[in-house]
Image (spheres, rainbow, N blue to C red):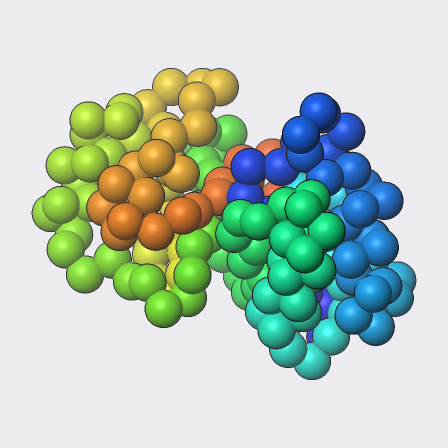
Length: 173
């Protein structure tokens, strides 16, 4: 099964961030060959039975080498496709982003999420275990990560709908 690993706060090639070769080596070190980076934002597509187990192993390997020690959230590519299909057709699709966080975390206090979004100029329009779809009030904003982190108190990472559409065009269906 194809999975996508979303690394939190990664800009490959920038000083202090893991490089593309660091990421791919970490996958290879745990026996997952054929991982493919997508863009330079810490998004990697790979094949495995248990995507989050692989992502945890990659994070541990990177941390042991002192390269990276932050969140890595893996999701099946099919799940990403489903969320994108539901969220990419509206007029505000260009302002929409998918925010990922540990699957154990779930938004249960929707009024608190609405207040946090309002303060950060966005709104949560869909959510479930380990994800939220967020629409920003203005173009070229990305407020999903700080909003979800404030609501849930867990680290999160976001990818914009245009990025996810390109990801699916390249690797999906």
